[in-house]
Image 1 (cartoon, rainbow, N blue to C red):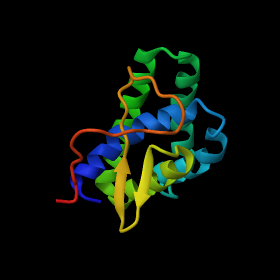
Image 2: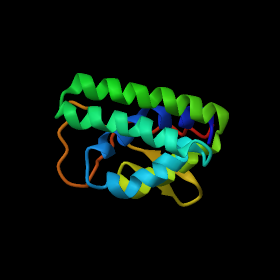
Image 3: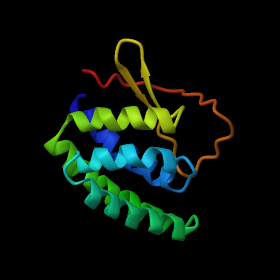
Image 4: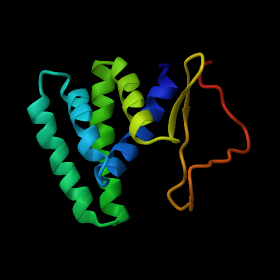
Length: 139
């Protein structure tokens, strides 16, 4: 992945992981995310760190400030992870494409599509209509 896509994965990936923590899908996704953060060597430590963040997310009960703080903590962890292992961004993309459908997709030919929706927006259903300029981040 190129640098701009990796930076977008830091931003949107952290928010998506924090959101996933508050859903029942976390039970299925958590082991893969733990392996991603732990890289097979620090899985127990990564699991403990993620559970602390998840507890804060669950206790926040929709408090935007607390959720933003936890997303920021995840952004910092992702930034450090992607610096040491750039392939981890692609792994996270694949996990989120599976567990957060419609927001992370891989189109034919290896093109990455990341839909970022403003948190003040109202979204109903799975349909997203994108208008305006679409930037090709591969350049």
